[in-house]
Length: 114
Image: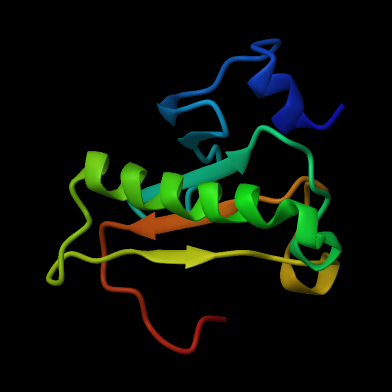
């Protein structure tokens, strides 16, 4: 089981900010912005590049959960804004083999990212 599966199963604690039947969102333990939340599908998909056509609805559900989380956190506006990041593989910074979306907000985010 990945750490995310253990959080979903409530085996280890997390600061959960959103949850529905498809996804869970919780604060990152090593935040890279004032608001840094991970949005994780409850169905295990190791990484986005391994998703299949049968995962289409779940992928959409994760993005909808990210939007709902941003609204709940008060960063879903044109002025405030937020960034969504999905890492695939070690070179991209992936550390947990369970698809997840980083929701970053609370400061001006530069482009391109490092």
